[in-house]
Image (tube, rainbow, N blue to C red):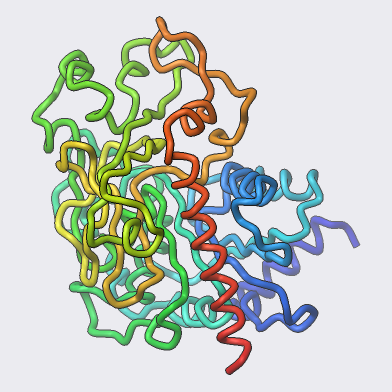
Length: 374
């Protein structure tokens, strides 16, 4: 039987019995399970790099990548990358249940799978991506908003709603009630999804709505600490500039990074940023724990009830951060530099990134031991 035939038969089986993909592991009781949404090739490379650098120190890690079959992303490319590189700890789970904008904040065809996911996961990550359709948070769509992959958002925001509850839709019992210390991390779009999924809203464009700037040249004059992506890419598209920007963030004294990770409000860690939308009205249960240097943009949110739920508007996961040989430029006049140099030369930036992943890894291990002991 060919590999393709096996995949087709497996897909048909999952279509008929979708809960089978989340059946409790039997071959290895010590396996620690991480569920990730948006299992694209870049996501696989990010997790691989975090493991190779020791930042995500979980030797017996098993990763399940979840996506909806109506998403536009080419996950076959990721599957091929996993197969070619013999990454036997990463598997894929397509979800086939019907979901739409109308039932995101209700019990729906994905509800049973979300429940099984929580039961069999030791940690969950929502990764970065494109703009959320504003209709989900009951706003009109502004011209600078670009809707590229609506079914991805329907799936992920409904997952957040089922996990945490929220201001919108049905009054359901949050799945995390059954495991309130399960670590859930939202990165960039993932942080926005945590917020929208619990009933919050977004600024659809930071530069025009927060800073009142509608021209790239005026945005550049604001300076790098007010850039949340690199404005030069709009002026010099053929120069292959980085789309990211580094700026430092302000840690709030009563927030996660100070109280739990042990940093000081005086610390100025530099972070890798690439977004044009941001949290506006907070979702149910969240508090702000970090902002941009000027305090105008929310950079991190932490759940007040479920203590291991964190949303960060920046990118501590990117494999580019740890590649000392990578060279890039922010504008055409720059001397090429590496992201690694910026982290290393601006303390406590490197330690800040390391501690985020140490916290997440330890929280996953504790969750595994706690649920195993029940």
